[in-house]
Length: 358
Image (cartoon, rainbow, N blue to C red):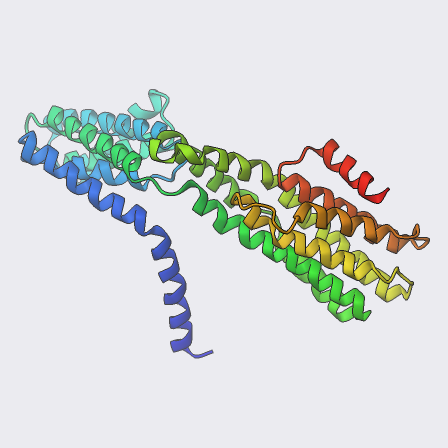
């Protein structure tokens, strides 16, 4: 791959990131502009730098506990302004003074029980106060910081990001890829191809878990749906994605175990029921439909019925081979997890599976 193609790929990836961040960037620009206008034009503060800075920080804060963090940020600015202004009045400005200002501001923040956010904000604000001294401006600077923080929060409330969109970007590809690994296992078993089964195992292991990224997105989406009246109607959606997460992880684990069992069955040369590959494919098809159903789409294809029927068909005659029994067991576990992703209680899902088998 040439450097030009690598550069194109890099720019293409960054363009995707920029497109996803555009709403937040627009929020920052609007909040900073409004904060400056309020502080400078309406309140008459001639040095209004802290207003747009505070607004941009609030909007850029990682969502999730954003309201609490915004209040912490304002507290950090207050400590930084107070410490910086007091020290500058006594010892003036300069390289050594900036170091002293930072030391005192952070120490004061720590003594007040501050976390890393308040401490770092206190340090940054104190540096600005020392670098931009202005006699008698400490109250004005604090008001500007408060104005910027409140306007930043107001912009977040008025133009919130969609709580559902970020969750879909994480969980939809995860479920589609899980379905793909199951479909690969079905093909491998149908063709009795150990190499295809090995490739399916590797693909299944690359799935991993939804993990921390999804947990962060859940926190962000929950906050966005709670604090903004515009998004209150999506609270139920966020809860649905939250309850689905552990079962989606279980479904991925089922696929890994099933792919390994399929490879073991092929390599051991045992016999399996003729309908077993079709049953695996049925679970794969049901899994592929989960993203649409999580969005609230109607179950027109009877995904639940498909999953249950596939697990029931896989049983057939009771398997005598241990490896085949493992495949059937993982199919049944996957069918239950498909139902659990859709919000079905475990006992109810298990009862449905037993009823389908009978």
